[in-house]
Length: 103
Image (cartoon, rainbow, N blue to C red; front, top):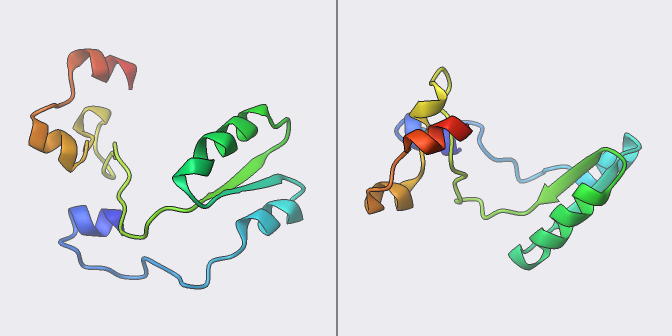
């Protein structure tokens, strides 16, 4: 959905399924560890548990359907062409040389 919104004039096609699988059960079926965070308050605990887990982890992190995830590198673009998001664009903050060296 994010790609279609930002790069294709909000022309949506096949971007959301109301019938998503239970990813925790899916992880179990592959003998991995499944974890879920349904709120921002649970996120740090789930991330810490993932880092401490000795097995493969599939994490189901609930995010608002309209939320975008940044930074984002468009398909075929270089790392220094990443999209930073509206809060960075409006503040005038951009990609710095020091920041590009980290990517």
